[in-house]
View 1: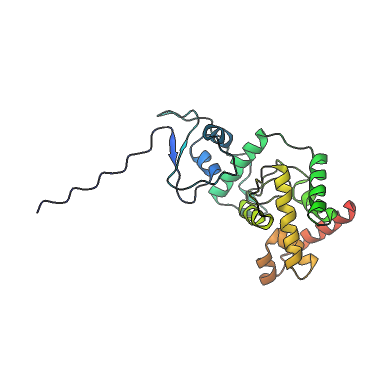
View 2 (view 1 turned 45 degrees about the vertical axis):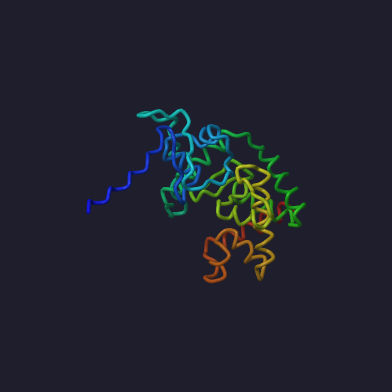
Length: 236
């Protein structure tokens, strides 16, 4: 019996394209492909909120065999904060998001403050509390991105953004100032409703609700709670 003929290897993706793999994000693809996230989105006619699926192919902007396009940012966001160094992929995503936010129009601090206040009022959250969070987290800076890839004026990480999207019943784009405010306020509202006290709710925004309830507040969390409450008085 003749040996079985091996199955042909799958054809490689055409030059200048990228085949999406499980776990990929648009910002990580852009970083690995040495292109800007904004250029990747424009080339493929998609937005940062587009859901991508493994096996699908993206076109890389301006890519030709043996060349690279605009280098991905590597130093817009530091890799560590308060003595903790974040994974390379998280920092790469943070740098890509920072680059994109820098390229987009952004509200002034005064405008962002009003967006947060109006959003909180509409969602039934004390505006002074929402303002205290945004001031502490970013100083009302929608272009802020942390090494943990916390995005925008309310400093919401992507996984928390997905949770906030579920809370409000629609997909939120954390790069949009109005959606960013909505995400942060939705999280604050949920934490208040599910925490035994306001202090625990405030701490949970910073440390995580499960961590606070299972391990108690860390010393830096206690300082964070005190800061939020002090800011809230100033915004009354």
